[in-house]
Amino acid sequence: MTSPDRPFLRAFENSVMPPPLWLMRQAGRYLPEYRKLRSKVSNFQELCNTPDLAVDITLQPIKRFGFDAAIIFSDILLLPSALGQELRFEDGSTPRLAPAIRTNGDLIRLREDNYISFLTPTLDALAMTRSRLPKETSLIGFAGAPWTVATYMTRGDSTGDTRAEAKLFYYRDPKNFTRLLDILTRATIDYLVKQVEAGANAIQLFESWAGDLPENVFRDCSLKPIANITKSLREKYPELPILLFSKGSGLLQKLYATETDISAISIDSATPLSWAKEELQPCKLVQGNLDPYALLAGGPHMEREIDSIMEHLSPGRFVFNLGHGILPATPIENVERLIKRVREYRS
Image (cartoon, rainbow, N blue to C red; front, side, top):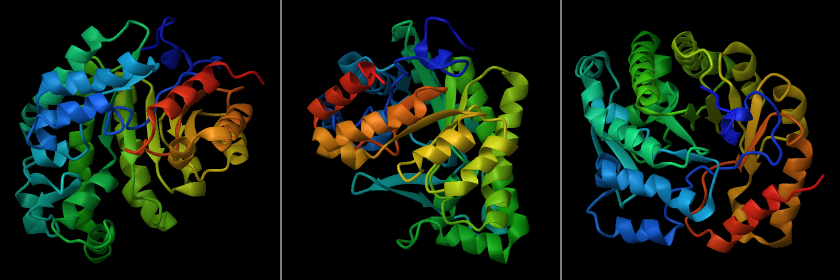
């Protein structure tokens, strides 16, 4: 999977200076070229499910900034849609899946075969993107971790805490909630294998909603499914770089590092740099973790934060990124300054 002419992939083996750089949500609303293209289609799903459009959007930040990696333009909720739920985005951004999955009877309605055919547009976009990327630029595929996807599947049309219905389902009926996680685990493995076959050089899992889980629930609902996914991928692709971003998981991130086959932990902005350096980086590549609001604000404070991250993490295996997705109001010139600061950094 690795290649000497791709800095992002080389970083998984050894420290690279300057470190590879890409940004979560780097293809999105802060870019005028994205906003122009978005204005021409009726909804967000059309962007995701039209390969030519998804490819164009994926390539936009590469053409503008020359990032070391592209991440395919898609959405983690295309998988539950392929499993049979109806997906819509209210007000252009708030995702809703219907009908909600909250009982054994709801589980029976899920499609457990032939779901990959509904994900063909993303797989086609991956293959097309790989053929159009510069040879030195890596391509990242992705999926949501089962717990996070389950939170949306159980939420349905409710407007409260995203995690509430999933937690209640787990506590009230752990057997059937585990069935839901098992369905998602198998489907996620199948989907990610197909992404690699289509041209993805690396995979990132997004665990957005595990941050407030008690440790025993965390182990059942987040750690175990992720361990199963990474084990299966590692059996098929021993050298595949597998990254995990788990927002708000704090000290429990170390369990991912020690009890799963992931290659890298993408830390959020609240993760202390000294802790990440001492507890995570000795065994895993670390990716992160500039606060997106620091990038939004720009100026001297942003530059000090960049320098601090570089001082702590760049001597080891490291990829520079944000601690969450780039914000839509972020000025282009701040992104340009970030790239320049990282690539010209001197310790």
